Image 1 (cartoon, helix red, strand yellow):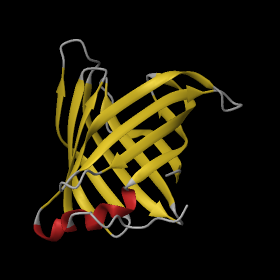
Image 2 (cartoon, helix red, strand yellow; image 1 turned 45 degrees about the vertical axis):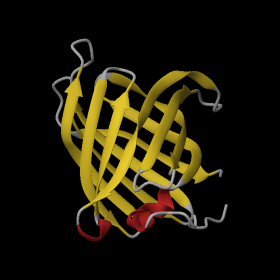
Image 3 (tube, helix red, strand yellow; image 1 turned 90 degrees about the vertical axis):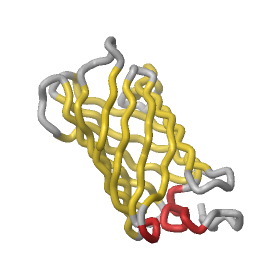
Length: 167
């Protein structure tokens, strides 16, 4: 689906314009504390004219035929350009599992690289101490990967996905 930069997009968001839209696709999850598997994802990144993007992600586990098995994760948050010429950004995410993350990173043409600058957990949330994420726009698709440090394990591969823009 061809992408056109919205005409009402604040100039601060131009380096992140390639992320705007509704994305769907599949990915893989892996970690020492869980069995490897596949997931489906819907990610919507939108703006309302202010200099930040809204972030809404929903994932669910899928079986080998691609059928939904059960919900996995929900993220709600904001992606904000910061710094000189909007070459840096913050991603603030709240999770339904009692975790709040603040990522900080750099924006390059069609690539976003971030790591956690802060993690807060409710007393009932699982142990999670750090994460890093990379998003890239390649041939009209959104590729992303996440490394995680949790439950006593060092930072290592956890999630990756390939998403297609659907609107």
